[in-house]
Image (cartoon, rainbow, N blue to C red; front, side, top):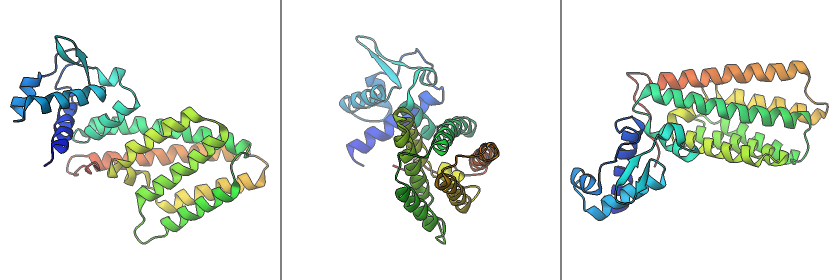
Length: 254
């Protein structure tokens, strides 16, 4: 095992303890000496590990005092949340709670983008959008669809719409959400709990509205909102089942 792997693995273990509440926010983190002794490593490597935790937002350095535990749930940014989600998998209740928040935020960004763009479908090359939907359909029809590729393709479609709308901040948040989900196979699988084909059908329906250039009717808007609501309920329920006792949580990718 290489030195970088040791640093990453031990940093993840200490971050997991922070995420799990084994270390209380405001308390001192184990010292360089204590980390070195617990994990049988030299102090220089232990210092690197604590430095990594600081750069990841889990601890704060105080000259002459050491590192204190941050309240990562209260003060952590998107990148901290991303790591917290991956590290929360051994704790099903926490993982499901965080996934529900992720799904809610993703739903808000995607719904806003779809409704605003559908009301005035300009700024994106329709041929590019149609080819992207064709690619999704090809992926969905595979005997064993590559769900990560499907999810990435759908993210790319939404990014195209957000770029056309000039919604750069929403695009940045969506990118981070996408990275969180792609790191956890069970999360990706849950997004396709209703089946890949239904995702393609939704995009086809949206493309038809864009092509009509008449804008969505009130009934169509209400239908899209209802479908998204039911869809995301199924997504969260599927993930909760995957994380339930008796089910082995899917390991995060490297």
